[in-house]
Each structure stands twice: as structure tokens, then as C-alpha cells.
Length: 256
Image 1 (tube, one colour):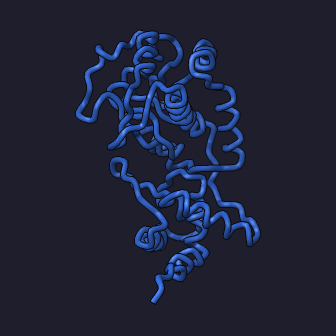
Image 2 (cartoon, rainbow, N blue to C red; image 1 turned 60 degrees about the vertical axis):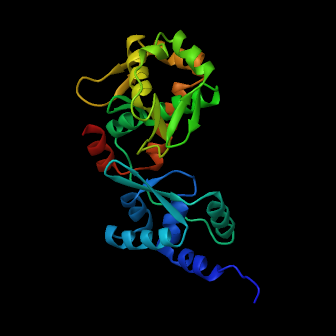
Image 3 (cartoon, rainbow, N blue to C red; image 1 turned 60 degrees about the horizontal axis):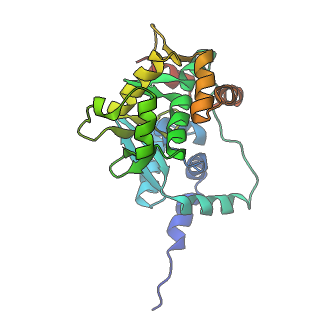
């Protein structure tokens, strides 16, 4: 008997309206928590948990744990391609989002994640370091500092020999819970945040986890890493108008 692909099992999982809504919410490649996926699908958290378990078992999703939180993403680009092809057949439906307050939006833009930079700016900085060849993704959710990266650290007055590696090395990947992308953490992330504050690029809030970019910092981010801070902030404003993560989740998690 010839080998045949089991199309019916994947089709059955995708065909459910709630599951398809959650899957389409993940097509952008980012990871999201169960609560956001439940809201996008218009179902309860308990029902979402059941659906997510089926999608995991069916190989359509994978889960990533960050602390006590679990984030779900598509199992791969092949799943996204299949969903996009199927989506092109039917009408487009907007994914539901809850709006953010102005305070929540500021926290999502730039904040401290324990002792390193997080938020939209933290992710943009990490991606810029990778794009310039200063960091390279490595196994076990780590970043390796390249020779070019070591030279850049010297120019930033944070030589690598002054940074003590942790058990997982100098730098590790930390999943940003709002951006659903990784930012740099570990001893290098800690030292980098300190250096940016010492150089006057950033100012840490004394009452919250928010981080403010100074005018000098905005110019320096553009000149040194090609990051347009104003454009990042405008993107956040547009997202706020259309709605994104839940305001209650954002304020609670950023303030804790």
C-alpha cells in the first residue's frame, strides 16, 4: 500500500473556527500566551487550553516556557505557509485585540526586564546587533559575541574581559513577552543596560520599570546601530490605535 499523507488530521484541527483564529493570530511568527489567543478566538481560557493541547499534539504548534509563563508559536514556516494559502481562499477577518493605555504603551516601548533592556527597543537593539554581526545566535538559547562584537563592546567602554560569564555564557536569548521576539539577556545584557544609562542614552524610571530614551540617546542609537527611535515610537502609536495586547496584562506584568 503506497504511503499517503494524513491530511485529514491537520485539516480537522484547522477547520475548527476557534483553533483557526488562534493559528492565524500566530502567522506573524511571534509567540503569544494562551490568554491572548483565547481572546483572539473569543473563547474562555479553559476552552483555549483544550484547543492548544490538540494543536500541540497535532504538530501545528510548539510551546516555549519563560519563567512561569508559556508562549505558543507555530511549529514552523511550513504551517504558516499552509495557513496563508488556506486563508487566501476565504474572506479576511480582523483579529480581535484589546487597546492599550498610554502608560501601557510606554512600558511596552522600553522597560527593564529584571536587569536588562526589554520591549520594542530592546528587541530592535538585539536585532541590530545580530544584523551587524556583533552577536550570533547559538545553541541552548544563547548568543555568541563575535570578534566584531567584542570590538564594538570596547568602543562602548564595556570590554568583554570585564564581564563575568554566567552558567549559560555571556549572553542568552530572553523571549520578550510583549514583542514575542528575543532580546539579549545575561551578563552582557546587564552590562549593556548599565552602559547605555551611564552614557546618557537611557534614563531608568525611579517608580516603574519604564526606560526613557534621551534626545542624545535617540541620535546615538541611529548613528551607532541604525535604530530610528522615532519610527519605533510611531509604530507603537499605530499599534495602540488598532489595539494589541491586553492592557491589564501589560500594566501588571511590567509593574511587577
